[in-house]
Structures are given as structure tokens and as C-alpha cells.
Image 1 (cartoon, rainbow, N blue to C red):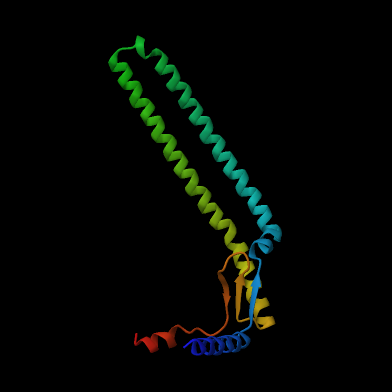
Image 2 (image 1 turned 180 degrees about the vertical axis):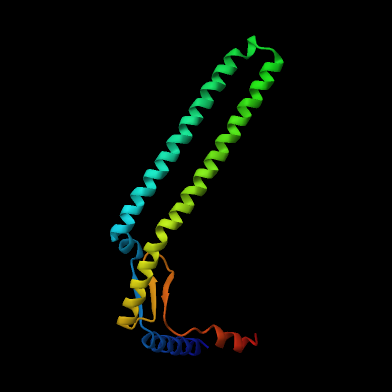
Length: 166
């Protein structure tokens, strides 16, 4: 039984080597390529500046709300319950506005990030496809992440579905 499993393993290794030789596979350090692109560096700087300005705006409003909270808390003993209740409602509204501003800033930053990186991603993918075709690579994997980033080889999906009767 042990000889049979060794023989099976040897046959599988031989088969795997044969299949691997039939396909041309390459790896690519996607991060280093993207980080070397001047367009990405410029976009990163612009997005960081936008993020910093949004954070500064939010912090300024949060500091103003905190100062108002401290002021109201110090004066609460001298005020009527109605005034204190009104001030609580005002502070609650300020808190809701801050949360809304923060969510809007995050959404705006995400939208601008997507829009700014779209042409960079297209340029990268076009260059990758051109290089893969020129060098005869069927598959290109990211060397930092076990992810397939280019597929030019045959797709086995239909054959496997047929074998499964799907």
C-alpha cells in the first residue's frame, strides 16, 4: 500500500510538472510598480492633503462642541431644568452634525480616491496585458499576495461544470 501511494505521488508530480511547463506563469510585485508610478505619487499626495483638510475641519468643529459642552456643564447648576434640557438637545444636535460631517467626509474621500485611482489602474492593467502578451505569459500572480492579476490562459470552468453535470 505504501508503494502504491509513493507511485501515485510520483505520477502526480510528473503530471503537475508537465502542466506547469505547458503554461507560462510569472509573478509581479504590484506594489513596487504602482509606487514607482509618478501619477500614483502625485495622487497619493493630493488625497493625503484632502484627508488632512477634512480632519482639520472636523476637529475644529469637535473642539468647538467640546468647549460648549464644558461651558454648559459648568453653568448647569445655575440654570433651570428647562434651559438645561434645551442645552442637552443642542449638544445632541451638534453631536449628530459631527457624525454626519464625518460620514460625508469619509464618503467624499472614498469617491475621490476611486475616481483618482481609476486612470492609474487602467494604465497599469494595459501595461500588464501588453507585457504578458509580449512575453507569452498565460498567468501573472502578485508576488506580495497570492492573487491572480492577469489571466490569459485557458479557463477550465466550463470543462469542470460539464464533468459535474452542471
